[in-house]
Length: 266
Image 1 (cartoon, rainbow, N blue to C red):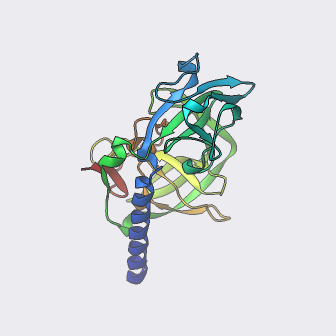
Image 2: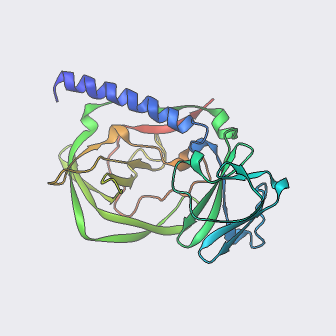
Image 3: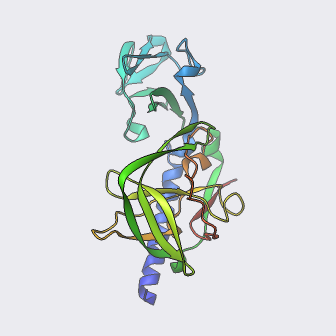
């Protein structure tokens, strides 16, 4: 990479880091998550500090509310019963809200939950920055994505202590100091890749695991493995996320001194 190209890559990284920090600190960013409430834990349908009655019915979540609950659905004050599916868009576009909080419907492996995003959360108030290593061109590595003949699912522990399925579509191969390493990865709807990994810095100078999101590989499988853009997972910002831990084989024996390391509070 030429000196000019390296300088441009460093500027692009600075912009990316600033945008990433702004996204995390946004009113409904990951710092605002104050609870993930699984309905299985509340058989009566009453979730502490969450208005209304929530119940599963015929593959959907049903919310019953009275005017005094102060809920809105689709931006309109709501009373009665409404069937809800899982919210899949931006948090601020979720259907149910209460006094500035967004009540987001979640479905995982047949279980339903309600997540509460509060812009006034203690974590958001305390947040100051994301500690990240300055851009280093040595960590922007050429790689190859090798798709599996058939997608597979492995069971991995999640941050909440529950084991869930993690879908994997192939592996990314790359070299660090002459040694070949691989990371198992999923393919996102837009063709980009997503890998959950740990390395020799994990739990020490960096968070216990991180995410990597390379752009879609080209037709021959070539992909850039840029650890400068290694991401802290959502659970590094709020305890109520259920991030998957790295699958077997995704713990690198090298120290990846690049990317995001820790959350900084003030």
